[in-house]
Length: 446
Length: 187
Image (cartoon, rainbow over all chains, first blue to last red):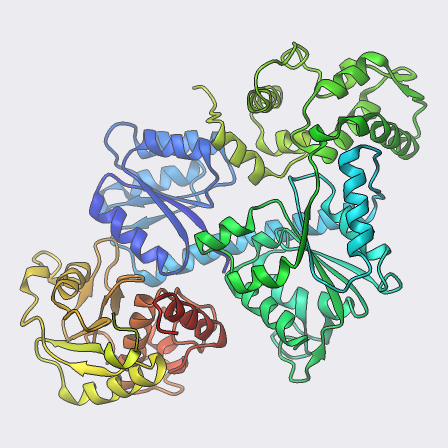
């Protein structure tokens, strides 16, 4: 079962504490609040997998909180906590979108089965999303493009580190092209004839990760009808790219460390050791050193991975590259959509150059894709760009943070606070958007 | 400053009447899994202070707090063993409870001697008690529940699950225990 992020809402301290203590033994991340108002504040700022919500609360009732939570984040599963006298209300709550209800005190096994069921459903949904994203990735072609000084330094570094066998850690914000840098290292390395196998550690559901990486032997578990090679085995003679390595679970950190130390691994259910013949390139948008300090990333694995490291510069630090990249994306998307658009207008290019691109190259790519789709003439106009809304076409002013905050707000308003669509337009994933909303204290006004 | 495991025993502390035959096998298992010596001593005479009069059960968190206050300085952890029925307010009952990463834990024999519906390999209550004692002690060493069904840190929903698990840590939990011991300067 995956680790769940849980919010407990109950006005009785002793119940909050006992439920929190119990759930933490299962390694869930648990927060507690005493009122509906506080709960809504938290749900606006952060994403929760499960909300345990007492029906009878002082102030705003559990039913009101349920309705508002369903509006703010329909992906959060709400479990109502009820006493014997309120079962009919709990049944009403389920009609209003609650996942289930529990009668307090709960049977311990009932609680654990319920959480497992919720997390399994979420894992299945993520799995489907992962498979769709993987299909989309396979159908795209991308290259590192740019002539800026910042990117030229990266090219030089890639040339230097490529021939070595050392592990490389590529850091940088979301959308800066870390995977492209890893591919470039692979292409210039002695392993270039071998495969480049990418693993997005943040996207693969936890329960699939072990068999995905290590493969499995026929009969290792009920569904293992045939023997399957994992990505480590598929990377034989080439490069294994571990994207979002900061997202891997403590268990997988132990397994990876063992592979890197012993240069051997086993398929799940297998007894024959398999040689780990690949070079590892890892990437992250997180600060691994800080994660080590916080105890969420193993220090020994950090030193194994962080042998050589470099940072991909954010797009706002290499704006000189924007025209070249925008033209590249324009050609690509006009070919894909079969549209006749020859150029980007001067006004549109000015917009592209003044904007700060918090979602980096991926956001630029998405902006051009959208402009090609909605564009009517032979040129991309400023109004075709998603960054050119009424709010953002004003001279931005202020600090980078203010600009980013305002842009996020504008997109949220544009999409009616649809988190999924907003994240897509911004070119970042939903968790990054939630984190930014939390950081900038962006919350929907009631 | 003490830095050796040999100087920091785990205290096994019966609370109220507990079958004396339970204690030596628990001591052996604790020594084997955690690598600390054990000592047996009663620090609480009774747990009436934790009785919930309506539920007629004993609030395990309150007992844990009392145990933590009474554990001798030289002992690294304390494991309370009781025959009373334990609960925490949100749940109907618990087999035991521990302070996650803390010093005290407790297990109860109360619900461990029931028979299971499908006793494939039904064990006696001593084996079950040992497993639950090791499990709760594991929590005090910061170990969380483990998905490996045979690992001692696996959360058991039923006595059948308890019977099915082994008396050992899986390889992940062994590494995580070593991490914690290193963090404590005892690795």
